[in-house]
Image 1 (spheres, rainbow, N blue to C red):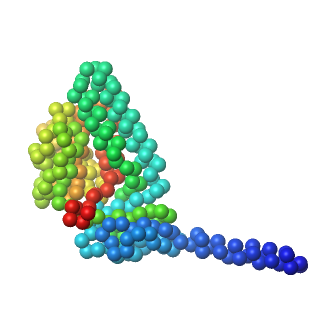
Image 2: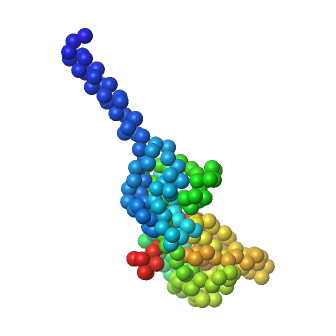
Image 3: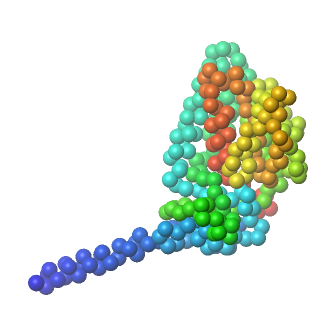
Length: 262
């Protein structure tokens, strides 16, 4: 075997040997109330618990609002947002055609509000480091470029949707979700029978608030969002799934840091 062939073989072997090291690490971003913010390298096929434990989450982190952000879900959420913007624009145009100016204004306001929201790639997950470590079904594989975000505990509830103006209200321990509606001016187009409760962990619940469909009382966790839907009969012909889909997109948004930590 010639020296040239031997050299080429040695180079090829070196490249092959280096391949495992290139794919053996998974880069993950850590943000918020953690001792090790920024990008870290984890072993290939690392799980949520590996990233959560590596973050050294601070004692004032708010676990109920922690978020797992996955680049693999961003495109799907961008499409969902684009569909919602299309539906809101269709609703606005139809309302103008029908001379329902108030509905057209609300659709336009919601469209501008939604337009400012990012597609985060958030996926609902258990992110308490020790809890997820011992819960095998929840301890899922983490992917390249994923982010774990641990906010600090807020003290308010956000009310948005078919309201005169979105508002933040003080949390009242154990208070039923529907009672917060008295602290925010609702639009005349607000649905009087249903309310969407978006807890800070990203889970969405549809609560009956009418006399005929009253659900059991539902208390809110700090940082929860109440989405006040538009009356169903106003959107049924143009965008029948608007309220469901908009509340689902809201659930992908992140809690912001309290003023003291900004």
